[in-house]
Length: 243
Ligand code: UDP
Image (cartoon, rainbow, N blue to C red; front, side):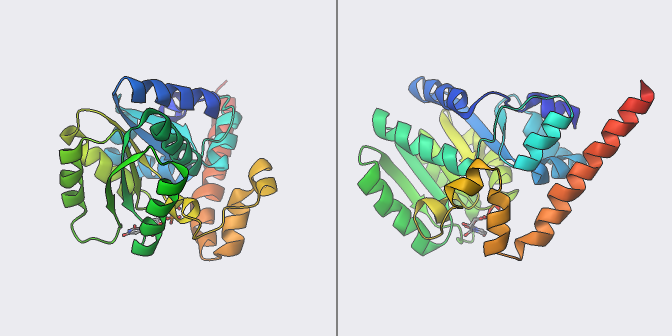
């Protein structure tokens, strides 16, 4: 667990976006996991998932506030949250500036179609080289199609952990590209779902807004975030006893 925290990006979102900009300009290959406590909990119980996070090709950025807080408790000074939806937006902006090829995969058919309209309007210089909804039967076949295009930016919105597992499995088909699992970001960026009001985001209470809108998320939140913080507290106490 400590290794995962140590590997997680701890500077600002602005600095990380600059890093991605350089990768994009130099046509490098990178896999970004926007991690929340759920990802770290999974890694503790699933060796393959943990290996994926620790791979040198993988960048971990702290998405969930639970992760930022836990990191701070363990003296890993994370500067701020870097949400997947923000990275998706920044990558579209950069692709617009540098006329890069973007491949979008995931979310419902009506959402992905709306995404295309939004990109054509807001980011007209982006080259959309592929667009698939996330409910196709053979998801790996989409990656094979994608590989023919060799995109510069790949946004996969299938929810975690599936989106990360699929990207990681297919990564060797690509010579370049920034690959990010962006969860429910297309729902928000397409305008089909509202993001939390700015004040919630500023106060790091976006999770509360999401639960209020979709109460079925409460169990998932409790199972991952609340139990996670308890685990970290227990770990800290054990460490203190050892000293
Ligand atoms: N989704 C998909 N195919 C699937 C399952 C889910 O495309 O087989 C999409 C779903 O429509 C949604 C996204 O994956 O747009 C997951 O969103 P959620 O907010 O649950 O993801 P999280 O960010 O919480 O991981």
